[in-house]
Length: 403
Image 1: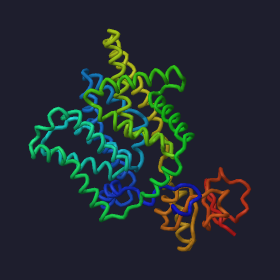
Image 2 (image 1 turned 120 degrees about the vertical axis):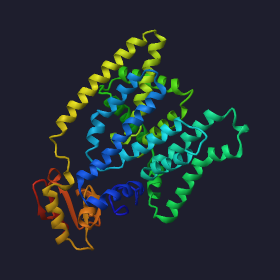
Image 3 (image 1 turned 45 degrees about the vertical axis):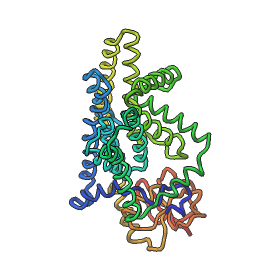
Image 4 (image 1 turned 90 degrees about the horizontal axis):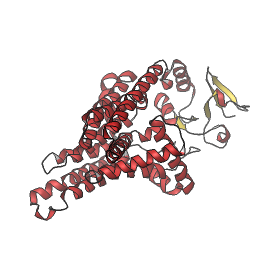
């Protein structure tokens, strides 16, 4: 599928962490999408107290920390994204847990657990590797003045997280097949200044969209100024948050494709944290701290209300697009009528492979004739002057066969 698609179709294999987590539920409920969605949503629910702990560690006002956490808990991006089975919410939980543990860094045996948590984040999504340099920066910032006086035991505890991570990393490499090399090659071979600029512009706009603000230069400059101010404010004690935030952001900017709001999900809490820190800092310097708290409180309550209202409307949308009665009929037809050596092209090849167990690739109508696909399943909206025979037709899709 990866080698024969007309566009980049992702790595040969994604990390194994999320499938292994799903397997624990799938073992009991099989393909019950409600149960699988609830399983993923549970990681978001467990992330909420972690977000509060992170906010509370740097904000002196408990109410603002609680309200800021509420703003994330009720934000439609997270609530609506919970209606899916994807790795982002489990990764959010383990990455936040790692950041909270790094924030409470101490030389005790709990640091072995931190190594496991960092590996779990990495095992779910590759960007979890950025938690390692974040940990290193936190250790330097906290212990740079007294590292020479460390005993052997303290030195072992200080390095235990890396040892645990390396141990699991090696076991993962030795015991499980690896398939991410083409992902890395794609990054370095397709990176371009134009793509980076477009990504930067896109994610800046998404940052404003997250705050429900329109795209214009005064707002963009103001929010950027407050966010950078907040980062400088916490840099004295929490530089590791800045390092992790910037590394993930740089990767998103450099990535040649796949611009999507979902990739911001792990770092949006940090974005909001830095922004609030900036507002509080400016309020303190202008001696209007109480007014800044009042403004933040009103804004958070107002936007939380808007988020709940938007999400309530989302309840009426059928999100199970991959398993509707129409799609099940298509899967049945493909299972019964397509030979095992034939290839089907579709915009979501992994979905089609999963439900039909047939060979699939990604291509479109313009590349169909030159591709290795025998069939092309496409939405009827893309049905323009088909010259190939129609093998199957449903309400919204048409299956054409190469003559």
